[in-house]
Length: 346
Ligand SMILES: NC(=O)C1=CN([C@@H]2O[C@H](COP(=O)(O)OP(=O)(O)OC[C@H]3O[C@@H](n4cnc5c(N)ncnc54)[C@H](OP(=O)(O)O)[C@@H]3O)[C@@H](O)[C@H]2O)C=CC1
Ligand SMILES: CC(=O)N[C@@H](CCC(=O)OP(=O)(O)O)C(=O)O
Image (cartoon, rainbow, N blue to C red; front, side, top):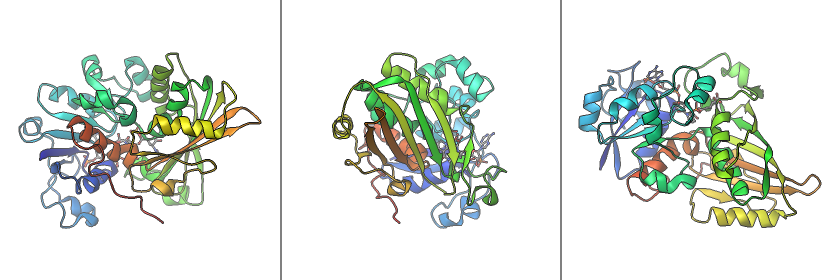
């Protein structure tokens, strides 16, 4: 049994980690670190956890992490792990970072999209990008794991097979993304409070979202040429769920059925990616509470465009679920361990 610490204890990513780890037989949550609520019981903030966590949250202590813990999950905003992980690198700890701090390998790109200084180059060099289905073999060897962003998880899983199989051109690639409000985390803001989001659809950070360089970087690596996507994010009135509808130009005549067969073959060994049959498209409810990424495909013969729809639960496959999938791979456990539950429906 491996001992786990979660940093950012009162946030949504942490709470979702605790829910999923409750069913895990090889990891137990030993420390919940909170910079704002240390000393408090988590159940006093989240009563749904009553009787499940019977110890108070703690302040961060680097030496006690090194002594007592095997795996640390950083469920913290960008800016935190880039300072802490370098202090842990001389230990045996496995670090899994849910934030964007280690995803962008070019430090100047990070600085221009995220602001503030980037992580040390050495830490970036050690970090493995944890899009589990694509980088599985590297993830198995990782000690520092950079968990992908939610929009990148959905978009990259939707686009990479088409680029790998060379059936689409690298430009233009258009991604129309929509997410539920839990993607913004626990703290309410003017952007996310009820009267702003209820009965409303809000475009935000159009062509300026910090997930753009992440999507560009990993698509470019697959295509072996620079790719710049057009990306538009929308906030929609639901709690969980994220869906990207993507458009790319086909290089040749190919039927919807043939593209679906390519995708099924590409993901044949990936238990969490499900490809819909012809005419079927995923909805966010189809994956709610689960680690699945569901993908639907249509060739538009009139315009020779490939249209791909990719749905995930932002808190599961888009964050904490994928983080556990990666921890499973890093420790040689069954990739699906603790993540087998069906989506919640309706
Ligand atoms: N929500 C989502 O759908 C997704 C989230 N992510 C990423 O996962 C990470 C966590 O997200 P989420 O849980 O939703 O965010 P939240 O805002 O809900 O939680 C983050 C937590 O981090 C802690 N924290 C905040 N500021 C600091 C600080 N300066 N130093 C140390 N700790 C701090 C706080 O917990 P405490 O006060 O207890 O320490 C806070 O509750 C973020 O990087 C986010 O971008 C990635 C993909 C999807
Ligand atoms: C609604 C909302 O604000 N969603 C967030 C989701 C990003 C996220 O959580 O991922 P990172 O780890 O990259 O920050 C956003 O669009 O920025």
